[in-house]
Each structure stands twice: as structure tokens, then as C-alpha cells.
Amino acid sequence: MPTPPERLAALQKRFADHLRDPETHPAPDGVEARRLAIYRRLFFNNLSSLFAKNFPVVRRVLPDERWRELIGAYLAEHRATTPLFPEIGREFVRFLTEQPERCGEWPWLAELAHWQFLNTTVRNDDRDPAALAADPSGNPLDERPVLNPTLRLATYRWPVHGIRADRAAPEPAATVLAVWRMPDDRLGRLQINAVTGRLIELLKEDPALTGRMALQRVAGELDHAHPAALIDHGRTLLDDLHRRGLILGTAPD
Image (cartoon, rainbow, N blue to C red; front, side, top):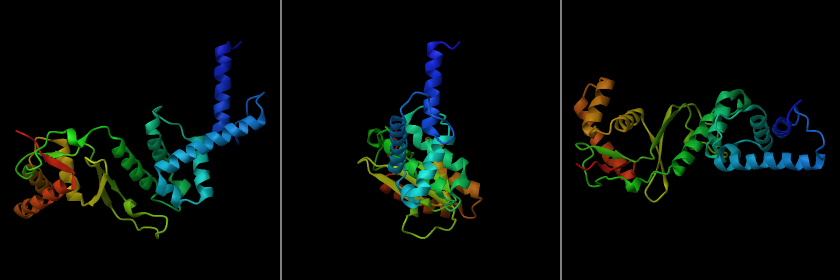
């Protein structure tokens, strides 16, 4: 015979299963139907509101009925891999990525959601760019650039940063995007090319590199016919990244 804690656990599971998927899982016995309806409505609406705030463009792109279908499917079918509340947005991105057939009319939807979640991640990053030791007047070409610690890069198959509900559907186009938080807490966003992305990756991977050393590695990886020209162009690029706040300055000696 089940013990009282076991009976309670079984009741809680049946209640939760019903809230997540009332069409498949019957309600527990002895619970008033009116109260159950209130719980179901609150549960659904709270999650729908949370996702709408975290993924505003996704919400505006989808018709109301399709949005409700998507939230219902998430509740009924998705099983989160983390109990952390701030990570629930990542779970929604994973759900969209794993089930692309649910939104076949919008093949870029999962990537759009990822881009919006990446922005939220940077906004919530507790590292303070202003707290890092960096010489803002240093030379990022011949010294060691200090990257903004909140800087994130992502590569997409679609130009997700330009998707809006009132615009025509985009055409596929390989897109590299950077997002970072500036010292005044505003977000910076920038579309970059693959070479710039690789340069930033090298600087992130090895903070001991000077800008020139990183550019030399990029030139080697590309088997560039004129490495000196690439490095000369890289000087201007590093200065631009510094001006925009992706690079905070150079490391002190």
C-alpha cells in the first residue's frame, strides 16, 4: 500500500500532468472543475506572458492561434533539463530547434529565438565591463586587446537581426552577429564578417595575443596572399571594435 508521501507525490504528478496537457491527462479526482480551470488558465497565461516578453519579435511574427498552439505544445511535450528559472528561455530555444516542423512556415524561427535569448543573456551577465583593468588609450594592434567580457558571437543561416513582423520574409544568408553590454548598460549589436568573427574568437581564446599576432594567425588560416595588407586593414578594424566597445582597451603591463 502506498505511504502518505507516495500518495501525495502521485497526486501532485497527476495534477501537474493535467495542467501541462489537459487533453491527454485527466484531472485528479475530487478537485472542483472550476478551480482546475483557473489553475490551467493561470499556468498557461503566465508562461505565455513570460515567453512573449523574452521573445517579443517571435511573438509578434506568429498569429495568436499559432502562438497559443506553440505554448501548448511546449507545455505538453518539452521536458526541461534545468530547474533554473533564468534558463527557461534557453529551453524554449531548444524546443524550437528540436521541432522545426512545428513552424515550417517560419524556418528561421528557432534562430530568431536564439538571437533574442542571446541578447537577454548578455543583458543579464553580471560581469561589469567597467571593472576590468584596461588602458583605453593603448594600441590594440601591438598590445594585448582586452575584450568586453559580455561579448557574445553567433553564426546563423538567416539574417535574424533584421526580422520584423511588418517586413517580408527574409532570404537565407549566412550571418555573423555580435552583441555586448556597454559600461552604461546599453546593448551593442553589430553584424560582422567571418574574418572579424575569427579574429575575435582568437582574442577570446588566448588573451596573451596582441592584435597583430591574432591577425597573423588569421592570415595564416586563410592562406592570405598579402598578409601585410590584411594586418594593415586589421589596424583599422581593431580601432573600430575599440570605438564601439567590443574592445575596452589594452592589458596593462
